[in-house]
Length: 170
Image (cartoon, rainbow, N blue to C red; front, top):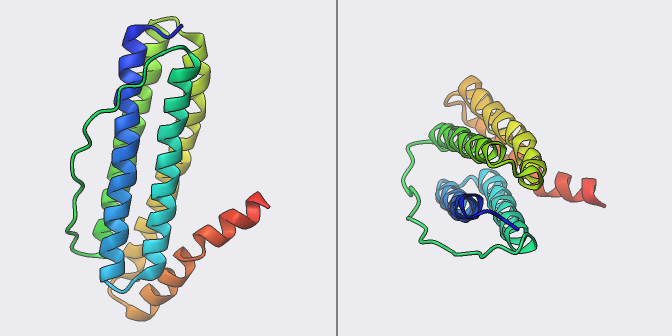
């Protein structure tokens, strides 16, 4: 049985994960409007991944005989000044999510909820990857600067994300 404090915190995290998906879709829309389809594809893949994360929490709450209570999701940012700003915001967002996951893990420790700790360990590890991926693109964009040829090539590279992930799943 899932304790009330953990249940409430996980319901909050379901909202946070869906917000993340919403934010990444907004970033994808910006990238599309800036004629950067590869950047947009990367962001869409990220949005799908965040939706999967939300559903992992959703299913875990139900598996523990808890009650899922969906909450209102606020609107995402919609205006960005550059591709670099998009990825800097993505990195900052992932760092914020890492803090949320760490807080949730800390709550599970305080509540002696070992099943939740085991479940959350996957997210702790996942957040290392999330921050690394966004951070690498930020660093690349800083190196590229305003060189349109390099931006074009990076856009193509980022557009391969879905293809590479699907090949790994096959």
